[in-house]
Image (cartoon, rainbow, N blue to C red; front, side, top):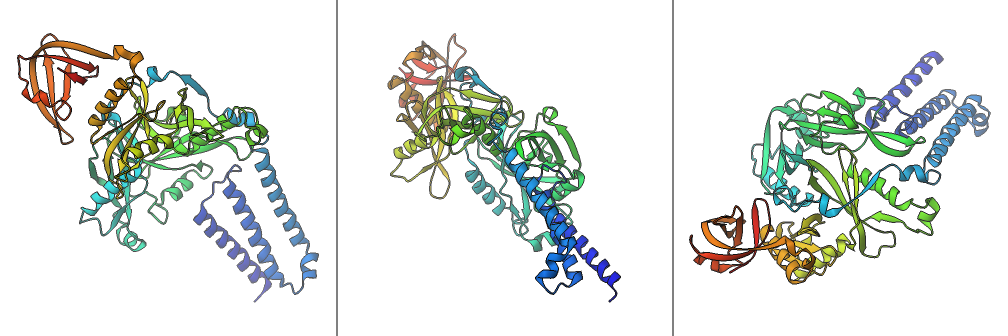
Length: 531
């Protein structure tokens, strides 16, 4: 074969292999992307290997004497040196102050910001429990279960002022993809995190762009071909106010050197049905988007803030004044956004928190609350101790305001992962634990515990007493428990009386006179004592 043909074939082989590598790994064409540096090294290795194959070197001496290989080796070393220097110069070692300033922290007052609990907006399930419900729902759909499975994404969002988790279906196997990809994915799963209602939402137009696709409709490849220079962070699956599925695709920007100071500067919204993309700056992102900033990135940025307070060397050795987030986080629905919650503790790991932070996943607004108390895992252990005979395990807690007391709220699950009970633990005195079969029963028990243990003694104004004649009485069943609702003459309040706590309520009727001690609520007041 002529040398010209061999040379052309080798060039073609290099181009084909480089193209396959790029199509498989889809690195961003951006100097801040580590993937593109690896791609450059891969191409250089291919070129040198092709040259060596063409020359058919027979000895090491011939290799060493080749000017082309020497130049290629120098270029590779230069690329490696630039990459290494960029990594070091972009690191917290030399940029501690810049890393600490990635987040702006505002100290706020707990009782002013965190409003008294409204359980219609409190997620009662964690992701693991949601996955059980989603898989159970999918198992009941006989027309789909053989072809599709449920994705593990389960993004928590606010939908129509309710916390829900949404996740798309995926093809059950590559063969099922081959036979179904022309029709696309017909539905997604939505789970109400307060009521545990699980629905499979069938779509008029199928989802055609997702992580389950293998070729050009793969969401990552689709985004790369539209935005070749963008460095995408963790994608999340969300729905807009009309229930239309979207991929929320945060775009990283690096503010410190080549590879340091990662934060989110832009957000691309990709319609999962049509593939249409819209590019927004973070501040212009639509309000229905809840997860523009990945939780892991926000926690990392806060840890930079807490540990680099006195420089990098101090964060490793002296650790004076260093704080960090606890080993876990959860989500809170507040102000029509999703906030990441985590406790703040010292780096020494002393099993206590000095406060906690809330970080808005859409705007990156960060609030710090100085509240001393038990860290989350200590509170979880305290709750588990109350039901140790049953072997229940606590979920990672969320933070609530109960009677102006910062309170951990968590679910207690059995070995199968099903929620059996609920627990509330006082943050500052975590030995005070209330357990209930339902959320309302748990809250009632906790409020009484605060009262009897003297924790709320300084907040006596929260508890009120009224005597009056029953104008109206009605009965309801909530979570399997009977409740009576009282309205007294001359009063607008509605008093909730659980039968399991105040059995005498079943003997009351309109016209009877009662004395009620209660905690104010909107619209229903929690009864603490009934005479």
